[in-house]
Length: 434
Image 1 (spheres, one colour):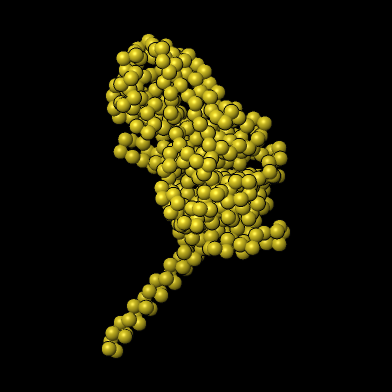
Image 2 (cartoon, rainbow, N blue to C red):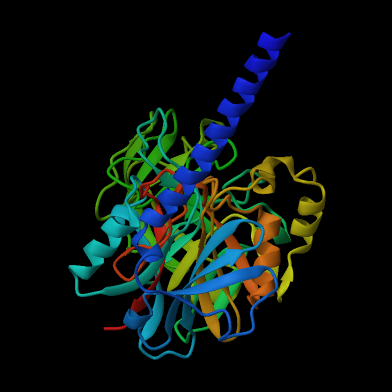
């Protein structure tokens, strides 16, 4: 009996040491980040903060541009929340998006994207990883986003609404595309692609731009922004040339079919596009569309204001509406994810990224997680509640997990879950005007 008791004591001691070791490593790992050692000042008493904030640190305050601020909030639930703020009235700052590698296929770190921009005399101040996507698959897609992306007025990507993690569901919870109009108005909506190709005496609806063509999304346009090839299988594809590029939110152009490919994976010409049709739908069109057939491609995004958006980026779920937690998110939080099992990832604590705004400011946010002793992350309901307490009026969820990264003032500001900066699909950015 005495030996058994000694063995039990040894087991308890070993478990306690392992737990202590894990906590110490988490704390040391967090402190390795230079932002924990340099330029952090306590600003607890400078502004009225929610009771759920234990402390707020100013990060790199000596390098702040007018209208820009960078903070780290210590949430009482056990999470470090990094927030870059931009005054909406600042004449020297602007919101922009940046596509990884300048195309849909492939990924890039925020550091890599900002370095590329700085070589073009662009000065980024902060950026957070944005849209969801696949990192790779067996068709050669080494990364591909699922959400909307509009860059400098060009419609780069838009998908069909799907009730699936990473996509925007077809409900008010899916109103998750953020856009900025030429006059500086902020929009947050579910954006619909109203596209059609009028050809061969008929009208073919277009479901998406630069997305995966399948039975759920049977007619997809691929532009040069996608990559070199469509990477489809068994799709019936038509190469369209003599067409105006780039695509925009309000678009009309004549075009001519210059090639027909019944096997998929067509080369995308730099001066044209490829229309891919899923085999089930293709049966209605293969005899009608042939080489040299002329047609007209039309696109009109809705809501109508989105037809003129210059910078747009999509997430997957809405967190805050008019200063209150999104109603679907409240039900989701109370049921611990049971009300929407396809999005149940959001009911667990993980690293997260988000975008929010109110009448005065824009917020880019990253929440560290999966690091015991430092930060365990948040659920989506935690995020919505906390953002509302901070005075954020509208907010959407971006891709999170190990991708959750806030780059600011020349370096990664937060502590990514894997200990390094992961390559991502696109960036929501605050930058200085030229």
